[in-house]
Amino acid sequence: MTSSETRPRILCRCLGVASTRVFAAIREKNLHTVEEVTRATHAGSSCGTCHTEIEEVLADVHGFETTPAQRRENQLVCESETRIRVEASVDNLVQPRLFAQGIRIQRLSVDGLTLTLQLEREIDASLRDELTEILRAHLCRDLEIRFCI
Ligand code: FES
Image (cartoon, rainbow, N blue to C red; front, side, top):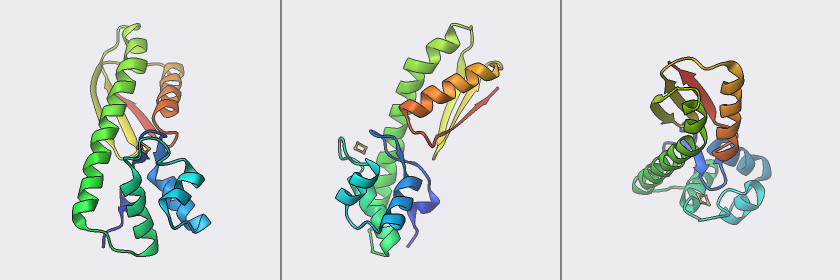
């Protein structure tokens, strides 16, 4: 069985909780149910879409079986929801700040807990820090933000 621990990601998109925090909480606090994980991490406390992913992490940590089909479904939902949330945050919160300086985003990519924004030219360190803080606050505090040209 392949553990989803090899695939760090924003496990709970509503609350911005990384899978790494869920794995750590389950181990440190010896959690066994979705409800316990939600109490400990807040993951899963809104729409509930991530509950099957929390179950998958519980299975990974405690050595239970989950079906490949369910794992695949969890991965597809996670990637799709993450992409939608990232694009909305970038469009609404980052794009206007860059546009005010005459800079466009040429490409956006999300790989696990890394978000890369390719810009048409360099931005200064203070704007980079500001945008990084905004994106982490809205998406996930464990997100790594990379700016490149
Ligand atoms: S994705 Fe976790 S509660 Fe909505």
